[in-house]
Length: 301
Image (cartoon, rainbow, N blue to C red; front, side, top):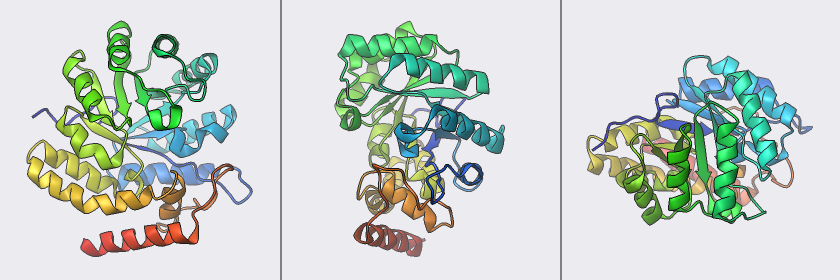
């Protein structure tokens, strides 16, 4: 078994933060700072991702993204890593965002596959390489075909890792365990694979992953951290912990994220009722699913 660690800058558990908003749709920066501190101090997160898809990044302006990064960096300080979501479907814009994050002191950038315009593998390679060359920060590739319509295929991931010293990891939410295992087996030493799917964390660890970029980490981060730590000591015990968490994780994804997790956080006392269109708040049925799963989980102890 490998050691339980991620890139030293980030650690093994990062949560892709929601963006709290006031009733008028403006960003609640004070609440963002409070959520970041809660994730680090109470939920064992070794890092947070700001302005990812869970943070409704497509609806945030560049100025809002920069202010979110500033307040989260100030709240977290040296207690955890702060990775900035710089990926868009426009390479020039992504480079601009990565450069801004570098100047502001982020600890890394995450770059999702370009969405909607569906570049081929050479286009993906050129896109990610251009982003990597625009910053000296470590870069986390984000592969999520279900949202972007394109898959970063194994040869492209390997080529990027070999050609760009600061492309150090991939967040895998493709659901393709065969591909994830292939990347783990063939990638250069030091390249890291993070699960990008809470429900598949244990299987991804079993084929060579080293950590998780989470949504559920907002409310069960400490348990997810403990489960991953346990895996490298006793996979069977980790499987039991994972089985307990699975119904709650499924509830958190009962509809498109981040709708359920923003509702779940309201139950923890955070101002996360509001989403920006085209995202909408949880329906009564969806709230009931989350309520029941959280109640069952908490009663189980």
